Image 1 (cartoon, rainbow, N blue to C red):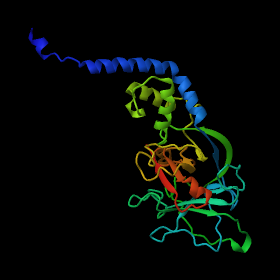
Image 2 (image 1 turned 180 degrees about the vertical axis):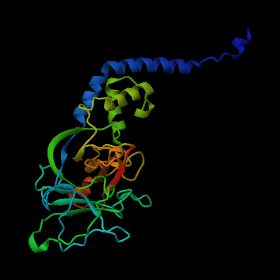
Image 3 (image 1 turned 90 degrees about the horizontal axis):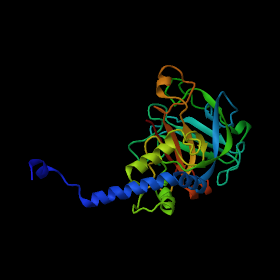
Image 4 (image 1 turned 30 degrees about the vertical axis):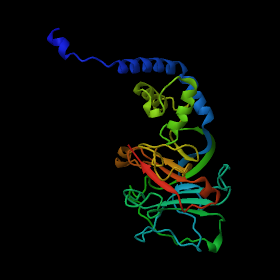
Length: 311
């Protein structure tokens, strides 16, 4: 036996078996990939409202991003914990939008946030504590002298919100399939995967890296038409740039309903160059508001989870 034989490392038999088994599973997945994704999409679709934001002002009670909110005189205008007024991020008039099961069919839902760097995110308190943001529902829309017109004035400085000015908002129905970064994806995918693939793995994260990468590529490499990830919307599955804060042992798994999502249609580089005609949550980020089905059914918007992240 020479020196090379003494120091040569022998691959354990168990690793050889695992490698061979994974190769078989990878090949089987390659053959059944389209079938698995087709079933995944078919069985995990939620009807949503895809929102279109168009630059321009709308009426006081209209659906909008930014602009002047409808606000009745009999309510106190929302302020943050420093007693500074919050700014309207979005206003949704459900009486004018297409009807969506489980959501209000009338009234106005509003989303207010802090002006400035973090747009309402609070890093010192749980994200459902509405210190620096507020969600308000006006079930009945008042008119005339009952409406407040003397509202706080805000800066038009760029960066006060993820955009400047105002957008009018329209909506259309869109069937929206599950997204890969929704906290329910891994378990949902594995249920279908195990139906079609002979595997010894128990969780999505136990699958071979090649399979996981192939799945990720399917969602992000241009097959977005099959599994769209982006867009402003009401209901459906959420988009994240980082990770879903509701899952993996968090206290927020019950917040399964996407109440509202505002995406970016620009990026921070465009914004900093003075092109603030678009919406930019930092570097191509997205904001989500979540609610529990029970709270939504009761029209109770006191426990809404808010988050935004970017790349």
